Length: 300
Image (cartoon, rainbow, N blue to C red; front, side):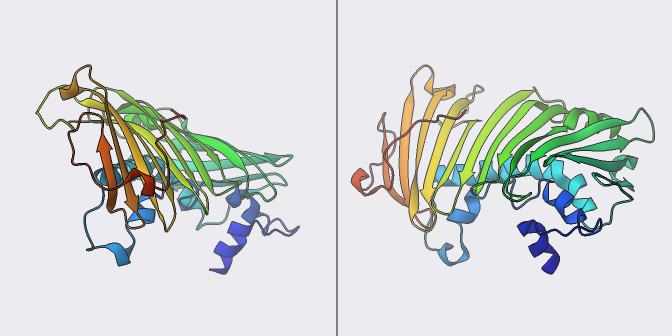
């Protein structure tokens, strides 16, 4: 717990061993680079009190999906946190190589100049050439950890080393200066030979406000159509108070018709207001009681 506190606060001394904490603080981690939407709407005390709003349920699933992308990329980084660097320089660190999945060992290399940290994970497959599968840049703020940056995961390269028919690149832009702010781009993702797809997710969470925006596909018309509808959702909430989800649906069983659907919900995610443009759902509650007015997605 003491080490975690030191890393989180960016506390450093002049010694090279203590300075390891600075390098580690410049790396992304689960606490700062994941979507916490489900945590805000599924607290233990609320479970069993009633069903969450449909759009809250959908967003919890999507948030878990996004976290799966991000956490999958950070597995290699997390391993170095428990181990000392194998090489130290005044402004450089190297961890590894350490054995990984599929017989691929990996090394993490970092350099620092004027508060800017560059880092990369180099894979060493048993067969084939070495290659970079994960890399990023971090700009220090008032503390090292309180800055911003980005990182990129080359899923296709890693999958090829493991003999998998998969492709895709995941890019995460983040800003730690005021809570958590993420923009996650998933490009040309294909798992198990499926048709490649592109996704964008935007997430902001401070002590006083949350905002989660995304596009997904779903058979919301529940007509068994081979063509899935495109669903664009924006969730906004005040932690501990409640929030609002606004969705736009096109395609699939809806054809060219635009369906607009809004739900408001309390602190536990339970429905307090509902309306939609095609009168396909039951009208519930009073919109004046919602904590937000309707708004469209503006970051995708």
